[in-house]
Image 1 (cartoon, rainbow, N blue to C red):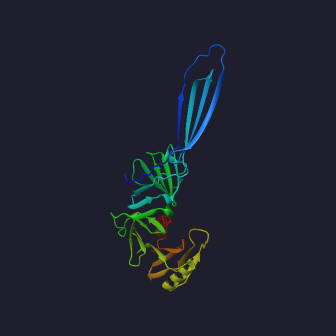
Image 2: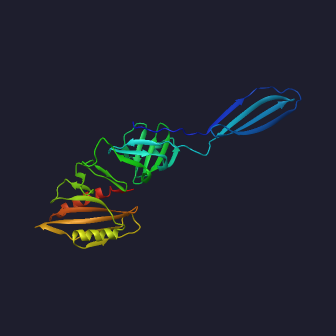
Image 3: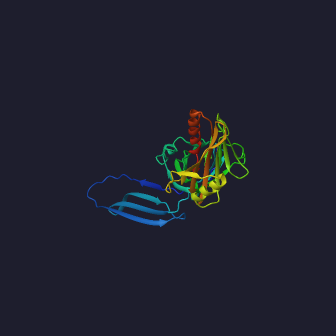
Length: 309
């Protein structure tokens, strides 16, 4: 079980004190009920309201009931969490990243958990179930009956010191993006230029890989110009969309390097948080169309695993 940072949460409490004295009413008598209310603030800043009811018979108290209601002060301290994922990534959910935290009878099946996160358990835990989707972390705290939602873009994450992330870890992450892949089908590493290379290990005509790079330009158009200069050829831009998370797709004319073999480069270029991220799918093809189609689907699975923060 991972370390959890505990902070005290003030709870709403209601204490009802009841005293009842049975009394028979005989003969002619005069009864009168008097209710008094008192309010004060305790040392913790809670507002306490006391209501007392008294009934008198001929000037004497017959019975009494007192109700004390405690209202919480406005400041609410949040419970924070730290855990390590199956992919050897340390996650620290702190107060600034928590967008919602509330009591729940069954936090693991809370309506607040998105459909994409349901069953997507990312870390070990017995009393705590850690889930995620593209945008949020979810902590189902079964021991406290508490569900917590944290914004991924504001959550601290770092690689575990137990394993280096440059030797086929199955997971890569920067401040801007993260990606996962199957280490049985792919081999990932960081090259000398600082780009992430995920090399395909399955059957193909030659080297086929995905390369992810963050480039020092402001727009996707500048990135296109940079790639054209590097490759020495014009790129064809398609599916340009300024409103989506990606800015455009582009491809270069196939490069034939041997009879019957050619290299296809297909780029997805993202403008994101003031940065430009390029995902290059470089696939070596031959004349086997069925293999080309299978490779396209395999590459698409990894490409769709890229998450922008």
